[in-house]
Image (tube, rainbow, N blue to C red):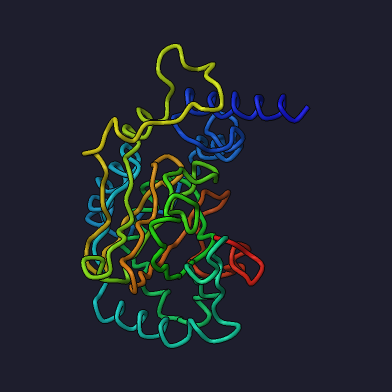
Length: 295
């Protein structure tokens, strides 16, 4: 029975790759996810206050819809410096941060309840960013959680194992979710830049070759097919990118020995109603961060 179950899982994964060009769960894909049907109804959202703001947001949203990612304007350097200073001051306090590496426990450490501990995080999601999200979704959406973490070096001998998203993957969330990553470290100094492929390249890499849909468990996508198409998020601290990590292959880079890299992440998904005026209102605790969790 175990072998049959494995074969069913392999075939199901290949079907998702062939039909959708992702590595997500079948139930999270567009055609079977009820949230996709909700999005198709396009509940109208209040328009931005000015036509200029709407016109500025539309091209950014269109690129994110087409390619799976788009750069956002950089955040204020003073705000970023404040976040970094506050994060570094509390991340190692007992009960504030949690080591969550599945093998090397302290190779990644998350801050619990980051918005409560660092209220200035609310300022990162400025009005132009919310305008882009409105244009991207065209329907109700919600901020699901905020994450703030640091990752450290992993020895070369262990780099081929999962530690903190360091292996190529697509996230297994509903494909209507998107994330905004905000750079908090000087990647040129510490190394380990986040990297990804856009949607068209991801589909080419993940879809099986003709005649390979029935391939066995050894079937794998081949990164070597598009080595020059990898995009690096190596911009300076304060840079921000909106990306659909369910539809874009991506991975975390590994920092240099003795170095750590910080990252801030906001996750959104569609909802039945427009977002509240205060985007962080009713934000629940992040179920993915805690002393008994792994990255």
